Structure formats: structure tokens, C-alpha cells
Length: 166
Image 1 (cartoon, rainbow, N blue to C red):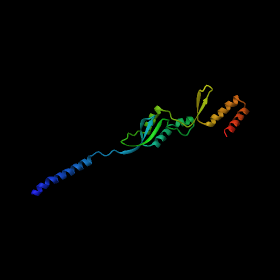
Image 2: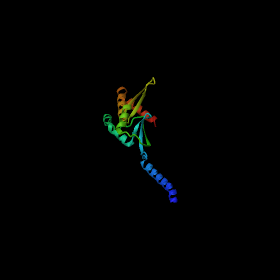
Image 3: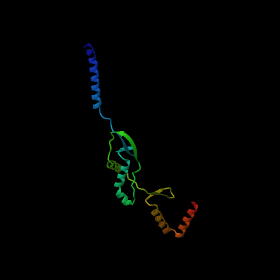
Image 4: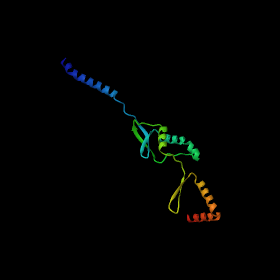
């Protein structure tokens, strides 16, 4: 009996330790889910996070149908100053594409592909003209030139410029 009495506290201590380990191990909070998200920044300021960069870009493109029709273009681009960076985090507050789009739309204009024509005057003032299609701009400039300058002079000037650029 004396051996039993001596070993009883050891056995009970081991059992209690096992029970405590099992209880704390099972009831401990689960680890946070680690997710891959895309943080959207507007001029360096965090707008929010989305699950997919592609889905955000597609959503923006779809939402801008009216702009595409108005300017007769196929693609609308995310505004300048927008950065989308991949981020691995846990418990990220993910916003919908619509929420991100609305926040961006409040702050910045969306862009389309085009050309900027800079015209410098004699007094070094610069005028910038935004043009969607270069060939239409070229035709318009030629019409204006031919309205004020003889067609032969315009053609001679173009030929001279072409020879100088070779």
C-alpha cells in the first residue's frame, strides 16, 4: 500500500497535466486564416483590399461602358496614381470591387488611350491638346494648313521634312 500511496500523487499529477493540456489545446483559438489579397492605393493612401486584381480591373472596365461608347474606345484604364500590390496577410478586411471602384471614382478620373499634342508658341507658352486618334488629328491639321497655305507648299514642306528625317 505504501508504494501505491507514494505513486498515487505522481499518477494524479500526470493525469491532471494531461487533462489540462488536452483542454487548453482543444479550446485555444484557431490560427488566423492567411490570405493573399491585393491592396489598392490611391496616391500612396490605402483605399482597401480586394481578392483579385484582375476582377477589379474587369469590374472597372465593365462599369465604364458609357465612357467607352462616348469616346469610341475598347478599354478604360485605372487612373494614374493607383497602385495595386499583392499582400499576404491574415484577417484582411476585403472590400468588394464596387466599393473600391466607388472610392476611386470619388477621387480620380479614369483614363483612356490617346495622344497629347503639345504646341509651343513664340512666347514659350504651351498648349496641350488631347487626341484619341492620331490619324484624325493629322487630317484636321492638314485641312487647316491647306485652308491658309497653298497645297503645293504644304506638300513641298512635308517632302522636305521627310528627307531631313532620313
